View (cartoon, helix red, strand yellow):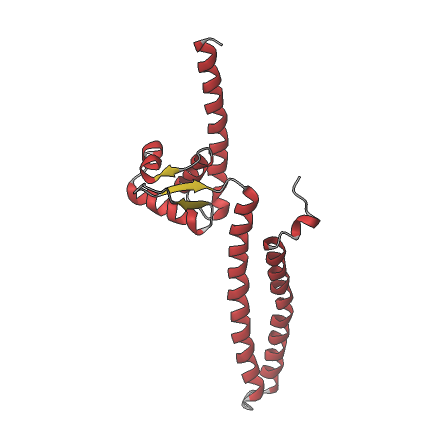
Length: 181
């Protein structure tokens, strides 16, 4: 293979990686990730691991922006800190298994949704029960409180279902219904 052919092959490989990096970075907003953090994750996807200095150099990002991006990616489990014996610098690696990324991110968000809304429903239903039990409300208000209480009770079905979905994703039982192909 000539030097020119080798150069052409390397250019095509870099162009192919750039296309995927651009696409991943652009779609990272689904995960609540800024474009710069999306670009960082996408770049790291093609590397074994990177230090903060390597990230800053390759992406020409400021130190505060880099730290914020890495922290956000760690929170959503798309980047993990690696420890290398004898090295004083932290090294980071991108999660390359998109199933793991999906499961970690959406389970985290859905857990939060279930907890927040179930807590709110519990408090709301307690207040609605007070309306009926305190003896000062009129019949119209009591009927309305019962109606709202019932509506909230029915909404719990969704949150229980969502919690079950999260459990089936974490246990990977979902893959028996929707196999990885």
